[in-house]
Length: 138
Image (cartoon, rainbow, N blue to C red; front, side):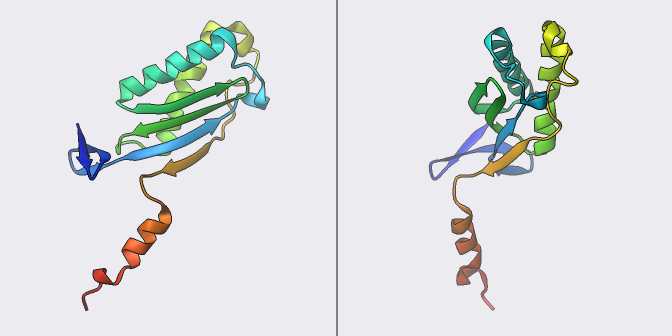
């Protein structure tokens, strides 16, 4: 269920209300340009399937020949590392099972990834709110 507070969409969870969105980027091993044609199409379907199964929402997806950009809203029960593991793990397993040329790579993806959390307001706005004198009534 989503809650609209002042034109902001938040999800309601059993013990919290909020929105967790992260920008992820990862690359194939040795940055090989293998994400083309059917591999690219299948990767997009796999990532969408993972998101649906987990109850996550893909807000944006770009699959370039040598990297993936993903903006995903996820639930509070998962860490960013778990989100990445779900996407990279399933896609590696399924793509390498379908395409023999990908099995010749030592692994589908590099171990690392880029992540950046995003929000509805900037860090500066939050800092100003927290540091506002109205919080200290002493």
